Length: 269
Image 1 (cartoon, rainbow, N blue to C red):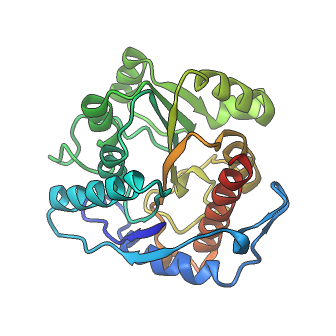
Image 2 (image 1 turned 45 degrees about the vertical axis):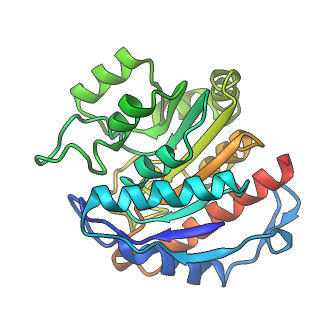
């Protein structure tokens, strides 16, 4: 089940992610759907787009609606795929999909582990800290990170959050990184995948809310995703695309990423 969540109320740099769901849908309608990684045509899968969630200017209310929607879909044994929107939505979605022995797999240039930012305790910069405090997932793995403050690094170390920076991935290689992450997730019964498109280098995805140099290539992102998505996946989201800042390139990358997530899950099922 695909659900759009068109909101970006706490954006701190380049707002516009509220326009992403439709831009990504448009891009997806103009891409070929066959995955050479999985040998699967996404057109053969049973995918239903239920449209956009009605969001509120109240962030808490929006998160409640996201949580309710995801919870209903999970209980109906559907796989929710959320298209944001800003990264804050992951907090609500993870609450709705909450399960025992849950792992959060987060592809992101940033750690989003601040306690407070611009007087907000719930925002795209703090959501992962709130998620860790409230849900206590068994494992949080951050992949592609390269932008952080000392507060976040200290918190991550203290909480046992695993970081696979772009530099580490470059040094160890994609295969070795994939093996290490898979081993870290081996005791987790369920996984939640969130992809912030700023994990890609701005050369590949310029239209994001908070671009950061030295990012992953598209191939590296998709290869890692394909090695980590399996039947344990209970929910996924893709966030932070801002279509007004490029000519459609990032929306195309986002649509391709969603296709590969769906393909990987179908192949594992």
